[in-house]
Image (cartoon, rainbow over all chains, first blue to last red; front, side):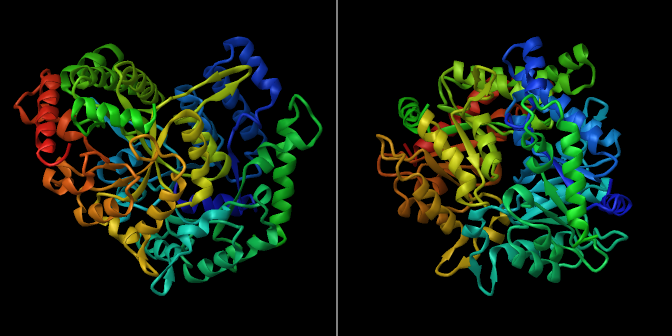
Length: 306
Length: 306
């Protein structure tokens, strides 16, 4: 699925939200975890089965109101091989429900290693005479510290298979200034990254005017968000930092173009962990709580955005 | 295992080599792959089982002459959940053979996500009342583009569990200059990263005078390697770029201190893919070829290093 299809979904659902599927131990409802511990004991398998059940519930609850989900790879890797199996099945289930899937793995490496990552998450590999897509996400987050030759294999797959990538440009965390805001000549390091990333994506621009190569830009830095929106009008933004990290809808307005397009805003704990603010102890209301939180976020965003 | 133990192994084996376990499809001997395809068909499972058999053979062939192995995560992720199972079992087997294991995953993220990565690769997670170490490597490569708060969870585990990390400072690839060599004020970006990384590791210095927080510095840039060695005398280096990427032993001499310590040099394809230069078609001689290549590399390095 190309970035055009993500944008079409955003338009048809009037909602530029991506639900972050970050199933940390603290957001998995006890009612789910206890059931699987009952079956598999206190094992990684029990945790991974809980993650999968939880994610399917979240996807069922959200798929008609949000256009995309973003599984955060760390929260699957932490449950070992079973966790990765849950990641794979989560991606499959989300695609079955017609959601755009952004694998948030922040991969970045060189040469044949970058090719392997690109093949794993967005492409295909060949075993004997059979081609297999190991994860087949629609999009992947990429760390470009290693430079162009680490990104090229991802670009090749974006071109061949209508996939997208989001390059880390200006991240939402407090320390992102340490390296990203260093001034190199007349510009910041993050602007240097943005400049390259924009060039990498310049021949991958689709019908809405946005490239398959997007930026990650934190909502916690509205000044930089505005600066980047103005300067990179063909670049779609993945915007973390709303909600739990402190950014508000009015901070986000600058991420969008005049049509109300150009960005998708992530919320993870704010949606999938919403049950924790309801007073529920076992979390059995997690799907209703997630749907309510996603609906509230949509309403909050539409005041300023789409 | 702490960085001290890695250094002890390097001394006792007189060999500052880490064998990169990068089981790309092109280095897996056909005799192994065909056997597992026979059992599991053309599946990710067949590839993953091949990887595990291949790695065990390599580890058996090398464990008495090299101190460490470095599985490159991409070449396991590309085989899906089964590939990650092969990674986990490879780490277990290498540790059983008393090798130091550097998981080359170049992870980097923020807050609770960085905590999840740190727990996955170097730490423990809790399921119910049980603590489990999902991968339990000795060391992990880390991308610090996101700044200190993305690195802190790794530092906490280095401290608590005697683990190490290697921060990407100046990578070996041709495009590493694009961002890493930008001049910010009076120094390059890679020096800014080095400066922070050195500070992060300043209270984690062990008996040989080296910190649990090391740098990745490419052998393909001997000038920068020398500069960093001179300026960061308490920092141990993981040095890729020898062999297949073009760097020679004489380029590496500058990475070492007067004792011949301070760095470990990676070779991946040069060792595990050595069978491909022997004329063998089925690769059934891969263990002998790997051992010979590792012995030749040791000899090559000892002229200049330890």
